[in-house]
Amino acid sequence: MSGLLVLAWLAAAAGAARAQTFQTSAEFAILMDAQTRGVLYAKAPDAPMIPASLAKLMTAAVVFEEIKGGRLSLDDTFVISENAWRRGGAPSGGSTMFAVVNSRVSVADLLRGLIVQSGNDAAIALAEGIAGTEENFARLMNERAKAIGLRSSTFRNATGYSDPEQRTTARDLAVLSLYLIENFPDLYPIFGEREFTWNKIRQQNRNPLLAMEIGADGLKTGNLPESGYGLVGSAVRDGRRLVVVLNGLRNARDRANEGRKLLEWGFNNFETREIFKAGEVISEAQVYGGARGRVPLVAREPVRVLVPRGASDRLDVKVVYRGPLKAPVAAGTQVAELRVTRDEVDALVLPLYTDEAVESGSLSQRAFDALFELGTGAIRDALSKLL
Image (cartoon, rainbow, N blue to C red; front, side, top):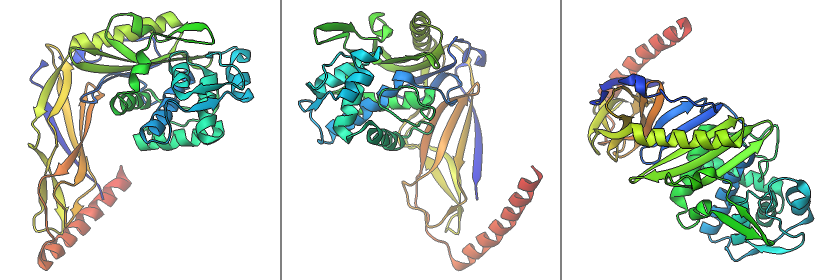
């Protein structure tokens, strides 16, 4: 059984045409607001793409979680195996922190090698130190990705090296970035460090946004011949944080310019509007076999969306749930989602909760609901065969 309740709401602000006027040469892109999780711009946000070194964000997430859980310390040390040195160090010809083979390096320094220098040797050393092998570590990456809520990502290594099965999406990388920012406030600042020196070799952070004075404080770049140039970045201005994800660009200059332009467009062209207060009844869900036939639905926090400044944008608001709900229904149960779209862009997705409890109905009420559901179910089945 499924129920879909659709509402329409017109924003008090105004002009839909401006919502998606920005254009980028990136093949994949998304711009997301941290507070509302609203999407300001999207271009193939759910299409599978090759992450390249952007996969190191997932590597960092696993390491951060190990530290937060007390299973790992920044002072712990891992050996730079011959595998890590040969495949990810100086002999590899790729990005490296230039760690010496068979040396022991602290987790704190390996994280800086991973994040600031995009060192493949650091990524492999962390993976081997935590899970024994990079293959085992990749399993941890996928488990953590699922727990975070990444819906379309598969990781096969800690470095981002080419693998036919290693894929992600722009939306998943934005969700991952906000997870890193919000859950690890003591470790996230590593992403904003401008340089790191190891083995007497000083390297600048590869994230070009950090040098632009636009409020950027992380996250990561990536590049493979088959993926093009990619960037995941975040910036804060006047208390608002935005996350940008780009991939499939032709060169490093385009990557830097497109990242800056999209962030500045988001900061300059949108404002926050509250469309429902916390606890305000947004809609009702049908209840089957209950003392009452409907239960009010509310959000636990104010529902705010970002709309173009000075525009008259139509917001399409949908309440989606599987239903009718079967009684008894407890108060405070998440049973639905509020989905707000603006000019075909998913501006907001928010859980909705029952505002009241609904007890089981009398025998006659349950019998009536059963007959009603039997009839409507037959109608739905007939319609589904025709559509």
